[in-house]
Length: 224
Image (tube, rainbow, N blue to C red):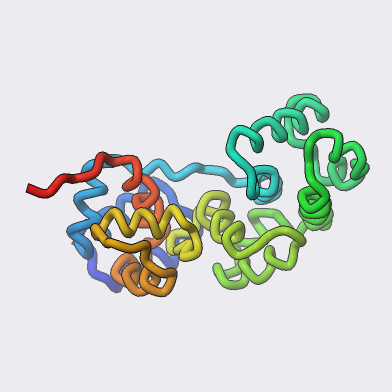
């Protein structure tokens, strides 16, 4: 059984989560948090989405921002259809007129955001390799300079596109709702309460966060 020091070293060396580091994370989380361990057993294997293209990840995040999943999928389908069935390369999207994107269903704010993301990617600043040498805080500071990209989106980028091991999206409603279910709390925990509770999960808070989301899919436990 690994020590906390070994866990921290393993996480520091895990540029991106893979099968080996996820296995280490599960051992750590089960050892440190019996309540979360029960959820891990009930949910099963951790299946964090493996996306490696920050540019396309951010574009999709903007398309789905502040609208229903159904509406987001419809806009994404129209955008892909216009560009031959896939999200366009950054240079092509950057050159696409706002009126064209408006006709595909993007709002003014989404158009500004996707143009900004495309310009950043075209300049070579959204390559996964570039982020590899940057810590999480530096990545957040870097990408939140892009129009329309906030802290929540940056956290999602770190977790799902770059697969960083110790990301806690403390502003995410689903994560907080998951903790409320996990600990059987009467009220939704604050971001500060979530952050304090998550100290036991370091240095694998990304995996713990994934299980908090999945916790909401489990049937409610009834008291005896």
